Length: 354
Ligand SMILES: [Mn+2]
Image (tube, rainbow, N blue to C red):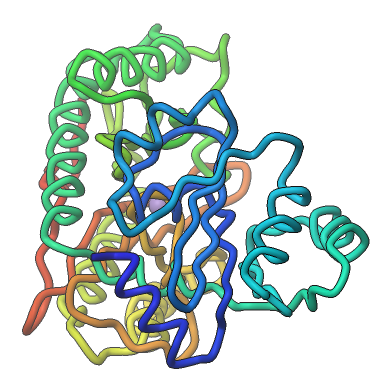
């Protein structure tokens, strides 16, 4: 079904034969979750290339229309054999997932094959989720809400940031996730002014700190992403004001999310609220990103005229960061629906003083 969709897109653009090398895309197309495979999509035939470690597994899940090709030497040897046996004169590669070294080796070792840039067709298809994917993203979001609630109960002065991050990971694994979708960010006090702070093994949460928690899980391959900023013991009036601006910026962007709106328009809405609040210089990153099999995937939710479509899942995550002082970010996962959107994450967004 998904391969059919890909084949249609490739044929519209004349991109046969096309080599899929991104493992997430291979998982999307076939369900294969191993660590080594390629898919060669020809005009009529599709070959799944992997080595002996994955032969039994791959054969057990591949649809009859996909032929398993056992790689005996290396990928160049396999491509050479398949090209020779099927009269291929060119090969389109996925732009984003082929290292220059692979490109060079293919050119040098597979004679008579013209190697061409093929774009990122699978990633583009992956932007619009199907019902089963939406179900998995909903489930990942739900587990993440539960995790946030659990973590809120553990935040108090004296607790190391690291312990919170470890607890997040334990909670996810205990609740059916293979892993976190990225290294959880637990940034207390001044650390919260760095949007991608590295959680400290030694720093302890103190009374009066804000704690920014950015975390997500991977549930059956699908990722969640949620950020909340909470306050410990008391809240500085400056950050109370900043929090309300970030919350308003996020709410405005969410209320504008619907099919046909450009990512640039949403970005401007959020940025406008933050600028008119006086903090335009303190929101340096983009508004959000698509998520699915990867925690960051297409579309990028930033300035530009890319139009959102139904069944895209994105994050909306404005923030204000005051260097040396602290930061606030609020992030949720949003599904674009027929007429508007649905926020998939449900954790409370009001100011929490723990
Ligand atoms: Mn995010």
